[in-house]
Length: 404
Length: 122
Image 1 (cartoon, helix red, strand yellow):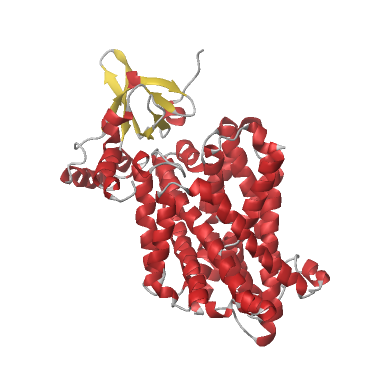
Image 2: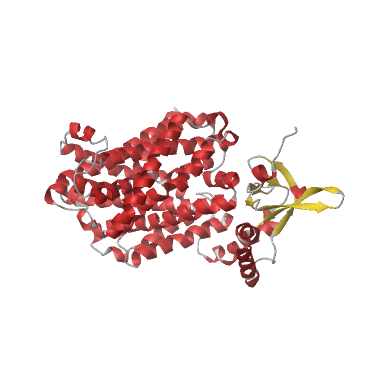
């Protein structure tokens, strides 16, 4: 009974925590520009993150190591410094994008320009972590995140052709605007395969003292949670294909996005959209801020934990205390949050090999996972998808920048 | 029980834990003493940013050293933990010391006493 409750909670929190500004805006732009055609990218990205999240839970439960800890121990400091810097840099941009998402949702509700919000929002995020309450509010925020299920309800209410949706699961070549097509595909992959999510998950497993008896639960939670989460992204893509594409809206301005729900639900659509975006981005901001501090603490051997008092973990607390306001300053400085989001998602794709390949090596190292090491199939799936994301990113990011 | 332990694979870069289970850094370096007419022996574990910087680049190490001495945060060399204090090597390396009174914990204490303590709510 207790296990069942844990599994349900795990799945619910994964669904509630899946959506953030990255998956929302990339899916919306994909639907707006290419109709249903890019659904395959969400499916591939979702498949990859299912495998990776399952692996990171299994790794923590069996080896009792967090990923950064093991990565440094296994490959040495001189190698570790490379993923440490890369992942932290990408996390920093993602954090700024998520803060931007919260600010935009506040603008939707209050009408006050988003540029006024980053510092108060940064203060709120910091305070929630500083008070050491994250462990308590984590589940609450994820539950509230279930409001994002509204996108599925809205998409179903449009009666899309399920035959067309199923057909779009198979990758196809674009008929026009090829660089744009591949760039959005890359951003979607980056938004789905978020390294911070899998690193964060492994820290949680260590804090909750998982062992081998939790492996079954881990499989179910990773599989179902991430699948349902991906379905929300697909629903947003469908909504954009139905609502934006016919009237030629590109979804490249954040003011356009609430139309996905207001077209169907009117004023309440705006409230629901703002709530979905705000809650999803708040959850993600908390996770990314913590993840940056985790990565430093686990890499350098400091005390860490989501419920520890700042005095008990001074360097850990100092890390997020510095990073959160700095990220907010990027938004204050006037960077367009939506552009920043799409760019940091594409950058995530480009850096996936650095974040994932060393982890895959650990997942195949008997010294860490013994008999629980990866099979050929899961290695192949993950390598294939991140390899593809990387190649597409390296080709399409320069083209996108050159093309403006 | 006898186990083979490899210095680089099993000890270097491992988590250090004090006798109360507190994280007190990583094994950033291992010092081996070379002796005349006797086999070399492991004498110290090195901890700290200076050691880490030296592993990357000697000029970087000099720079870190000068910065640390400037704010009087550290002596001008790395922190050393005697090998005789090692109690167990498993997932972590356990040390029979108290992090609070250990030099390797100086930066953590300094940040706590000079920064964290002054922020309301801490």
